[in-house]
Amino acid sequence: MSRRPLSEALSDAGEKKWADIERRLPELLKNLWEAPGAARLEHDPSIPREPGLYLFLRKGQPLYIGQTRNLRSRLANHCRPTGGHNAATFAFLMAKNSYKEKHGVWVGTRNDLQADPDFVGLFMDAKQEVSKMEIRFILCEDPELRTVFEVYAAEHLGTKEFNSFETH
Image (cartoon, rainbow, N blue to C red; front, side, top):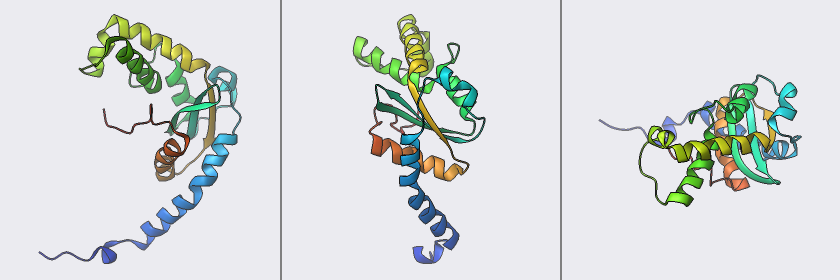
């Protein structure tokens, strides 16, 4: 079985799409950075139910970048007191870091951690903190652009503590 050379396998449409994504990344980052910032509840009436990118900041410091198909729903999930570990991802990561600082190394599943009363308190505190953080968001319809942008922005804004892109 012979393989075609990579140059023959590459799609012109794919190359053009990638070039377009690369070209748009710096402007998207600038737009997100310059977007109005406020706590989620202060933004709430203006948060659209459309695809986009969002950034959480604490005292002007970027902490977490995300992308979604529905900004209003996703931002509410991050902040909702009843949100679980799969919905309030940022708060979960904050609580997990606090738990590790308090108890040392953590070994187990997310469900194990959610069953620990000490973690539950840290998680509730983190959700409360996240709900008060400054959020900036912009619209972005293109799912491939949103996906690549999330990694690009995390690298440029230094949000790797909470945007590790490691699988669960």
